[in-house]
Image 1 (cartoon, chains in turn brown, red):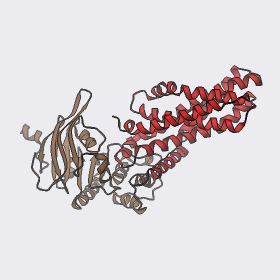
Image 2: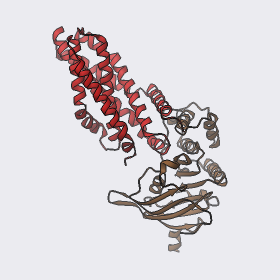
Image 3: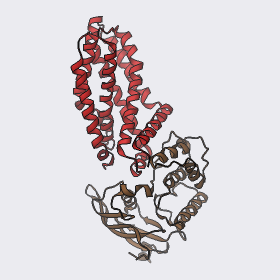
Image 4: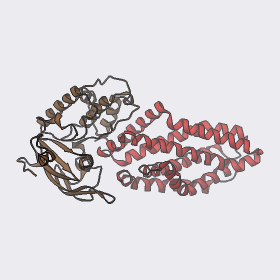
Length: 229
Length: 224
């Protein structure tokens, strides 16, 4: 684990998550600083999504501890966390704006213009009356990102945000994320398209068998490739 | 953060909007109840007196089975695209979701009852000898009893593999006291007898189970 200079906003100590007899996370210990974009990489089953879901309070740790923004209770800081999962987390029968207006009420967002603002930020039209079920997969992904950005979170947890998104839109999404990072937000991106974050991510977190095996600043320093060469 | 009642209201309106667009729950319930009414009317040919004796049981069993269809549908929407996770990561309280879902199901089942009761009356030539307003009280309390437990147990069986089977297995045994009170109260009112005891029993059942469900729902929502 590499040391970071700024104070950590997310601290994970000996985190273990078991599903029955299978351990998806096996003693993860790490610290993550504010204002950084972390790309979480690894093969399928490495524990990336489980780590993200556990940080988002959706999985209870089997043992170990997580502290986010100094709090060990997710409920206390959930207002400051944005989460985007692999599925859209949106209602298929409602339009993008209707979906976001509903979620805005869950966060107590009174500003009516905020929903349209985040939809425009991800490159979609807030006036589009089409229900989400009729969106392309890429549009769903972008609307899902808009939902995660809705509450202007300090910490953003994104699971495969670029899957099924065309290259141009994905590049735009990366630009949007780096903009948020530059505003001091901490962003975790689980992805299999790490090349998109080359030059944008501050650190690449390599996971294997439920643990962090290496943290690098250089995307090309894949620990597996290093072992092979 | 919005007040819990504001979140419950927003969630209820969202559910009504989704149901208005998809009509998943109401259509399934209507067809099911209609089938029960027609099949039973062909199976029996009761006199007016016999109708008053059996109608309470027939009506409530039909509504109970039909309600199960609606109860499964309301949570199915939340697990499609894992939307429930978006609620869980938000600061919105669990009980607002539970109240909204219960009220939504109450509205759906009440609409069904309003549509099906005239058919029951026509098919079974029903005429109540007791006060009609008491039937309305029994209908409201009975419907609440079905949907409050039904919503809770549907949420509980959400993550199980065969939730369509699991829900009736959990719901029906716990609904027996309420079902007994509903049937007895309805039969008593139709026959012009006193139903006070059964109405009080039903109201007590509603109060106890609403409280228990509200206390336990957060645990159920966050269970893995």
